[in-house]
Image (tube, rainbow, N blue to C red; front, side):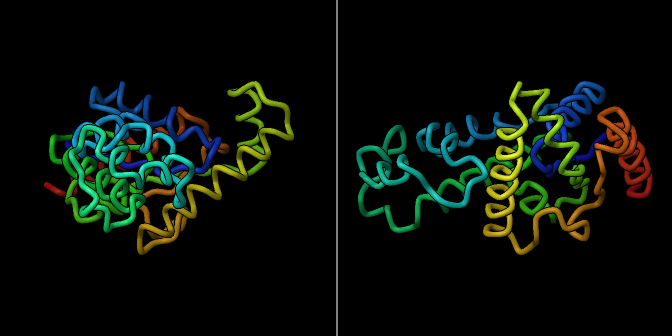
Length: 211
């Protein structure tokens, strides 16, 4: 297997679980929030900035705090003269570079963070979007996070909105549009194992065509 698999996902659709299972079956690296830690190390920007604004278009308290050069320079040596590009773009570009570096190291699975867009020119890319009905996702979040129904509904709506806004803002595509991915799969219909099987069959066929 020599593909780089990216997985976009609706909140509560089990995209991460599908990616983790694929990585174990293939024996290749898996990256989700691990990207944030690596991007911080490679860019020199504070790790908390990446975590606090993960897949979110707008900044928060840390963004305002970071505009102070002493905070922005934490481990990076930035000066006030370098604070020209908005910090949100600095963070996105740092993740962009890290995702590129990861893909160049070999086969892997990357979840979220516009990876399908970042790697769209990669010849070995297989881009996947995992979705499910709203009801299925709310039920999954209730079970997974031990939340009452109302809080699970709010979590699904909030996270979907943030991911969509982030993706649409930083790419030329629309989040979840099947035209932007090689595969779009309903995990509520076929489950985690079913999604893993579909992706593996697609990868096998795609790699045979590349030869």
